[in-house]
Image 1 (cartoon, rainbow, N blue to C red):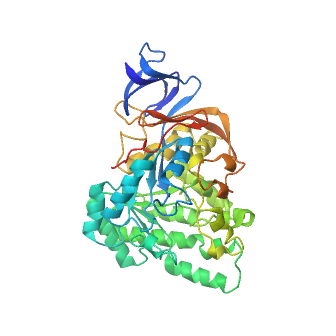
Image 2 (image 1 turned 120 degrees about the horizontal axis):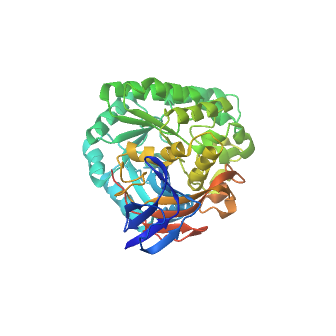
Length: 456
């Protein structure tokens, strides 16, 4: 007698697709059974015609709680995750104050435990360069560490204290400290000196239109920062991961070090779908860092996904309010960078598989399995096998997902100009977190506190 039995689905196992019944007890997968088995359960889910996949893991996610509840909360943004088939989010350390000490880490962790609808992990910020602080966050369960190679955003210094590390000597020390923990260093890679150079050139023209954003941060800014941090890592040998790759130049730079050190990278749906022309159409709503690029960059990133040089597709979900975006509509320099997107990571990748850009197995790896392996969750998350966590999604590959920002679950739904009106082939029908259905038939059934804290 099991707690839950999922019958009739095509199951994506590590060996490929198979017709199986999947049994859950408490928060674990406890049996993979022949189809139409005689097994019994307290809850039987008829999944005929659907695919059962590991729940998606969004390894780059921002809610910023407890800061700025007007933008989004643990509950609101993880409800959006649940609706999108994301069963675990990795929350970045930007908050107020920045998550750079064990005390702040514990406070954020306990709030997440009270409020999150899906599972969550927390990054720490190691840039205070204090070994006890870095090791303390590891002891409390940090999934990894994050740094920016840029300076803090003016006026938001407390949100980035310990996170922004523009100096090369300080970057080297971060790599040394994180290596001692055995965890991964994730890097927002843009060269501050080069960005200052291009920004000064553009501002000297007096322009403040949306396209100046990309001109002030061209691909070489990203590529140079990757080259510098990877060169420093030649001395240290820590695990390195480059956040949100946007360009062919950045990807080529990453590839030069792959094979000689432990370095991986990710990209995001917006960089796979939109060019810099979106800035002309949507203005401040399309401002993200690093910026959108050109069609050739999009094609290069898809090639990187197919050949395995890009590890993961993640959202960089980053909610702001309409008022914040509108205040900067006519001055792109003042606009806050970021956009929501956690609800549509899975449909976007299912659509890519339907269009033949990826195989379904590659899509699952990119949104789930690869991230789990990279960040110390192998055999627990991102996989359907006996003993793994019961974080699962049922999807209909023939159904359509039609994006309407008025019905999105994110509190920042009204700023979603990127995806509004988009159509994706593939639809999330049910999301199961820790053995419990938290989303089904278009309704959120999960509650605050259903999510568990995840540590490597």
